[in-house]
Amino acid sequence: MRPFYLTKTRSRYQPPKAPATLPLDLPWPLLGNLSPQLFMRQYWHQCPLLVRQAIPAFALSKNAGFPLLSPISDKALFGYACDGLSEARLVEAKPWRLHHGPFKKKEIPTTSQRDWTLLIQGVEARHPAAAHVLSWFRFIPDARLDDLMISIAGIGGGVGPHVDSYDVFLIQMEGRRRWKISGQADLGLRPHLPLKILARFKPEQEWVLEPGDLLYLPPNIAHEGVALDNGCQTWSVGFRSPSYRELLSEGLWRLAESLEADPALAAIYADPNQEASLDPARLPTQLE
Figure 1 (cartoon, helix red, strand yellow):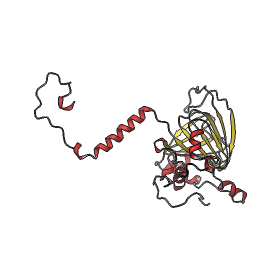
Figure 2: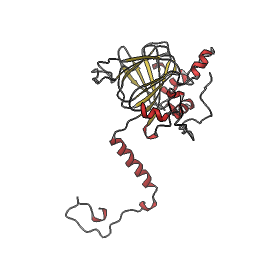
Figure 3: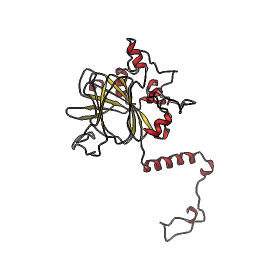
């Protein structure tokens, strides 16, 4: 199998770098021949977008009789789920069950078994192909970037109908997956489950994604994806929508980090002239 979208070798754990120049005003096949500027104006954070053959190499190779497989094998993904270096979750349906990694190899179902999904976070830090795919989306500010997650599933595998609070690009890399979506306002959840599954999901649109297809979903769009083939792989590039509390916390943390490098602030506070006080809770004048 040839990893067709790798242009150069990257060392393990190296984060992806944005290309020096991006043609932001030109059509991209990845975005259905929309330019990044047009995509951001018309779809980003607003409405879903389905792109057939966003990665044209899949269709070209299939037509030539040499269908491409995912550049990351099932064995590699199972290894990531077991080595403790990646956040991993195993979701089983019928009944719904959620397990957190790291796992033992015997705890992970085989690809021939039904109704399971293995979710692995941050794969861009584990494999150069994932890092390269993530770099395709560097026209979106890094402040919004979360990570690239890979889900691998047996037939019938999924996490149930749900909503997310982030923007996500769902790229089908191996096998087929059926997606159903809805803009419904009813977001009530089924009780007593380990997953946040919608109680009354009413699909309004439905598609089957094949390798190379892409589906973009903005926040709060109800959706459900179900694997139709063994070893189905979907790569999810997620962009979080942080709360103002998170933004403030991150800003203060970055400020504290920058101040640590200032030698002028390394001096220790001293108060040799401090007098006895009847009000110890009051802040000294020198500290005000």
